Length: 445
View (cartoon, helix red, strand yellow):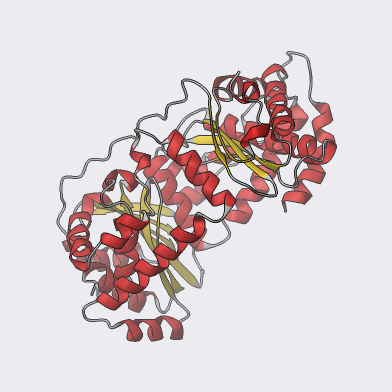
């Protein structure tokens, strides 16, 4: 898919204009009122519930989201939320592990858990006829988990294995170095996946205590996508999760990350090639600049690919990406034997975006690409659950998820130039490889 897009978009980039003319976006805006009308929301004892109906859908997907993310943990218990959730869904006190596994398998259903810097989730997927039973099982294991020693041991070892292996993979080691640098002094510095020391020290009693602390309705968000009746769903939640204590949790925005100046943190390692990532500030999904920045990063990704791989042949997979976090970042990255030349080339493409104005054809091409990718990414009920939850939790409300495409279509060339100048600066580089070859003046002028 990426290669198709790059090939298709290559010729369009020659239409970049050096003039200061700004073209209006002529693309027709999409009317999502019919889609938003399918979404209902209600409150059960402080627990917000969002339901998007998909009439006629044979499947149902949902997620119980826990607010807070890295803010819920400390450097002493980092990873406890991940270990607690993955162990909780193994079995309930009234639902043995093997019985749960057999029933899920027989119904083609699943229950999973995941964590992130901003929030965590217990997710499920099932068919519409099996939804009542799967929801009952979900309630039993989530509200009254067994936290059996065997389950804890198994999940702890899986997490520890992943943490140990990540140190031997250059890309993972680079990510760890980069996060340690840019997250210093920030709540994100508390690693939601944990460390060998913290994961190894956690006990079943620790998980039980943490579970009790987290399971408060004001910390939680439930999102469902499927052909469900809102009143019937509300009744099921009232009988189960609605009986949890409300608590007094108040969500607070994350502080901005420190990008007041650029930096270079390099680690010497003997490798066949060198690994580099440069991180800079980016607007979060609830920021008005987010749409223009998404377009700018899509253009930068193509420019970097064409220049570094295509023309200069310095790397197989140079990249430029933007995240979707509350305290958000974007980055350029490359693996190469010539980090100085590759970095100079990428920085030149950023400079190009700062000095030039994209014309109408380029903006429309980018909008079409986003439209295609967005619809492809939203084909499943599970993907729609994730999108609604992301915008509800960190993007200014679930309705914003329907404004993304029109926001992109409204972006002008001057908008892209503006965000390039506003955010593509003070880059903080992390590097693993041969440090002797680095010309530091390129990275930190």
